[in-house]
Image (cartoon, rainbow, N blue to C red; front, side, top):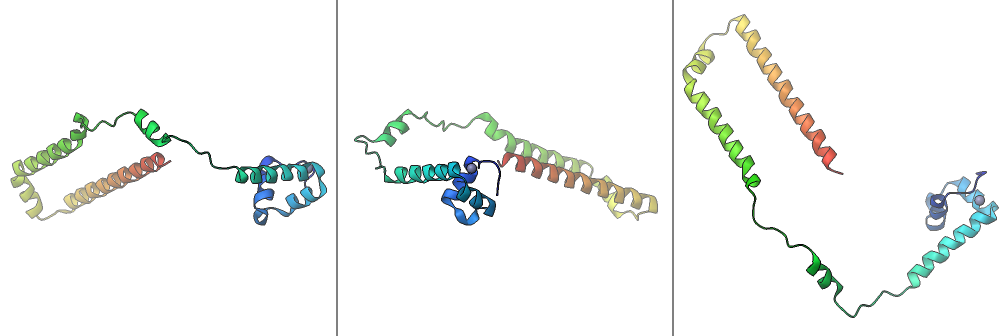
Length: 148
Ligand SMILES: [Zn+2]
C-alpha cells in the first residue's frame, strides 16, 4: 500500500482501466477516503461528459473555417528545379570526364596489376565503401530526426 495520496494519473488509471492498475493503487484506494472521493469525481465527470448533447449549429462551420484559410500557392519556385538540374549537371560532368580520360582508364584496366597497384586499388575501394556507408548512415539518422 502506498503511504502518500495517489497522483491524478494513478487515479485516472484506476477509474477508467482497472485491469492495468497496480495492486498497491487498488489497496490504497480501498483504504483511503480522499482518493476514493477523487475516483468518484472522475467517474462523475466522465458520465456527465457522455450525457451532454452534441452542439447543434445552424450554420456551416466548416465552410466558414475553410474560407478563412490562406490559399495554397500552386506556382513552382525556382528551388524546385535546383535538384534535377544539379543531378543532370553532375552526371554530364562525370560522363565528360570518363570520355576525356578513356584512354588512360583503358590502360589502367587492361594493365596487369602489380602488387603495389593492387594494394592501392583495394585501399581506394575500401575507403570509398567506408565513406559511402558513412554517408548512408548519417542520412538515415537525419531522416529519423525529422520523423517526429
Ligand atoms: Zn489517498
